[in-house]
Length: 587
Image (spheres, rainbow, N blue to C red):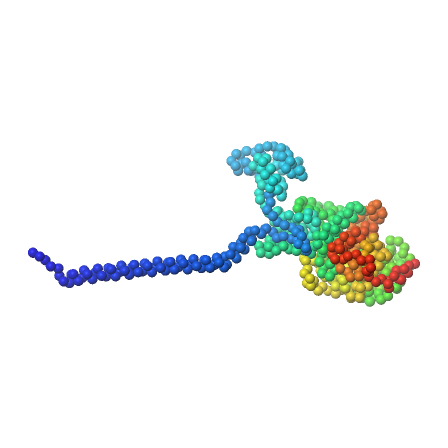
């Protein structure tokens, strides 16, 4: 018997299949939409990445690459771009007594004896101290045996075959000019930071990832620096002095073109003795080679102060007539006798006082001017403050606070009773000869037209008169040994006894010559100072500045003048016509 399905059942079955197909189609469409959205998202991200790489990416990549290529510490140069300090990768020789144990053998630090290893190292490094290295190896303590090892020497050290001799790669600070300008530069310690000089002052800038890309140019001119150090060294040795100091200063900008302190040190090889001395040594007048006599040591600079005293008297109106004569015989002021080293006659005028360097006449000039007036001018010249310069070590003057007594004014007038650095003196002379403007000294190169305004201390007319008087001293007076032909040098000698326990030590002098050139248009101040010079054949057995410090300037100026654009000219000079009759009016 045949059976038939109900009509509504057939309809239901067909409807279910249609719904199923519709749902499947919707799911497929949704999946395709998701795939399309994912593709768009990936493509968009890729396009954004490509765009970033095409714009910001190269800049950042270039910056990162540049930083990687830069040395870890910036370069220092002189004003003309001559490199003074550079950083570069190098090897060091390190003793690691645990190297064998770390390798698993657990044996002694060295395969050979310490003596044998030290001798083999000596064959590689001839300047090495065998005994010192032997003791370091025998001690069993880790430490440096040597810094700055060349690659070829590093290979020879490896050839010794001792695991304890390690050769780590380090960044080395190198000073291509050796000890030249060491007191200006300072050095970099083992911790990677600068010490003492401009390395310390510029430490942050030299380490900055961005700023270290550009070398830092100092005001120093290495040609002038080399000449100054050479002449100071020769002059110091010729008279067996314990130390020396010198400076060359631009009178219009305050730029230090050269600064030297003797004895010097080598920043490539700094020892403990270079930077530290015991209190006992310091009390005996012994200073470390890294001690800067130009900026950190204060001295009574003697008769170099007399032109400053005369300048103050002229400027204040106390001296109006250079021909006026003053008594030149000893006299008593507040219980102290003012005298000269030898009799100079009964009376002297101001030019004669400077030529013969009379303490007595200087005292009369200060009495006439007043001690407080002199004090004001000295303060305006910065004599009551630390010297203005970037170096961290700056000595504080020994300055009498409050009002000055009569005797204080007199003694300061001829260079005693006030102790300052040679840099103080250089800045004061610059103000005296440049038209009367005091400016701070600087070791940073000053761009043309960017010199600081400074402050006026002397009238321009006073400065012009002092330029005549300083030139006159070099022509007729104690500065004749500094009178380099054609360079129109002017200046003043100063020979001061050093103070000690119970008074001044007659056997110990500080000899100084403070100069400027060319005096018809002063451009540079030069200071040369010798600490405790002896009377030798080279100085005709004299200890005073006329015989030891002045000749240093006389030899230096012809060396540096042409390098600084000052050529010798025998047909040019400052006019001394009105002073010559006064100079010749001697008793």
